Amino acid sequence: MKRKWTVILTVIALFAFLVPSITFAQEIQDNQKIFNQEQVDKLKMIIDKKELSPDKTADSQTGLSGQLNSGLSSAKSYPTRKGVILVTADAYKGLIPTGHAAIVYSPNRVVESLSRGVTIGNNNWYSSKKTCYGVTVRKSTGIQDKTAADWCYKQIGKPYNWNYLNTGTRDSFYCSQLVWASFLDNFNIDLNTSDFLGAIHPMELVSTDKTIIVYRK
Image (cartoon, rainbow, N blue to C red; front, side):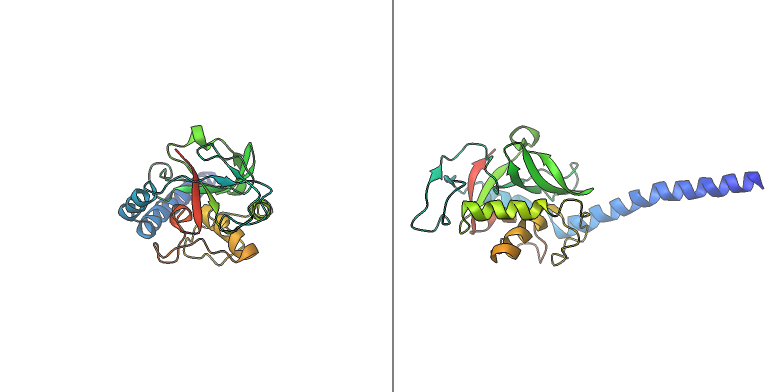
């Protein structure tokens, strides 16, 4: 009897070990279908032709399309202003061409959604990523950008959203969905494009004409 239970427990343990691997493999296949590598590469080529622009300042009272912006910061500096969006084209674990996105919360911290859910990360993408874009929303003010970052911060602890087509949920988030939702829900600014059939690729936050690039690596 003891041997029988040992076998049963071994089978259960093996099943518990294999299921996450099988699930993750399926997620890779599904996400590769949604975010085709060729399409991502084309998007990156378009983005890399866009020029760098000065960023708004933290206390700006209008968006960059306004007439009375209270100030601009110089372009090319790595962004530490609260509310700037960070995007990398780096493939997840070298496998999934999803890239990654986050929003600056402080000079040293970002809010991002990783496989373990929404969390705080290091604002060091200038060294930790092979590629990095800093973008700011044209029509938002510096104060509104702070609100967007605070909204993302309040989502910390929520799980990762593995269904990239389910952008409507606010119970879980993937990285670019989190950033996108912060501007959509608070200011009705939709940073999504039509490139990926309803899913939001991080690079779309850069390619949309509603943002400008203030930093590129």
